[in-house]
Length: 247
Image (cartoon, rainbow, N blue to C red; front, side, top):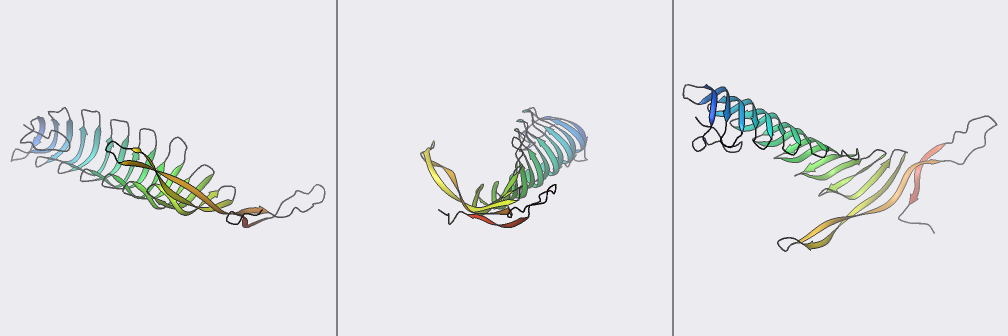
């Protein structure tokens, strides 16, 4: 009797293992069964014509575990993968890859909830930062923040376009107190020490260039009769322009 030696390779002609469960007329694993693979991995679930197909649980000897749908030996459909480092992915799979909508919880408590393509964050999604409570909401391309997005913090947010994980170009800080600071981020590359193969490593330096603050400003105070509450009138407008500072 035989089965795959791992979740990636399922060549029963070269990998022997133990199997208990149903078989079809051709002697292939079929229906519900349990396989103990030579490397210590264990699969328990449904088979079809010799392949993992349908609901099943695959336990890796390194402590990882997948619970969900299989299609012809591949994780395909809805499933949850528990990784050895404590992280977890719960969502859609396509041909063994995280693809479609899914939620990934990282070892440090961070969480990404959004679209995936071929194992990478891709499309619309929200990344939650556990330590600060902040989050990024916007577009992702090949695992990186790209195009329109916003950082959301406890008392303000920043809206802009993003390039290669960093804000770039015009944007604005929006504060809960009712004012906005407009400006733009410029990106520059700073060379660092050479890498292992002699290539120069670089880091992105961000420079915020403020331009204008708009928001809620108070009008000239008006005297009230004794005992009457003072209620200042408020108006919107540009309260300071950083492009033309006054002396």
